[in-house]
Image 1 (cartoon, rainbow, N blue to C red):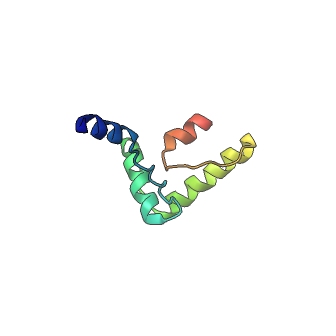
Image 2: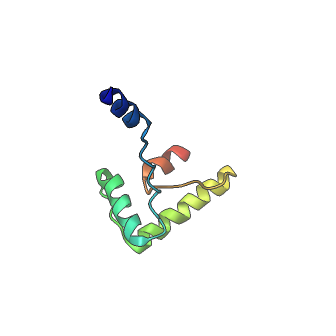
Image 3: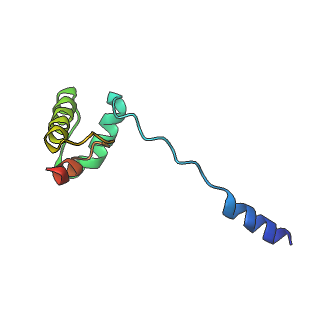
Length: 81
């Protein structure tokens, strides 16, 4: 009986979804950007961050879409282009 209660309880417990990282924080952006783009040999600098943010804005403006969350992965920008 206790096993059934325990199993039922475990099935109902849900872990809350963690909040998305704040990509406006340069330290957070640096970690995510370098992690997601290591295969391209891309490294973080403030200039690189600003260039990609500008590119992203231009892409969304040309697509006439509202910008959504971007995790720093350049593959996602490539898909939009």
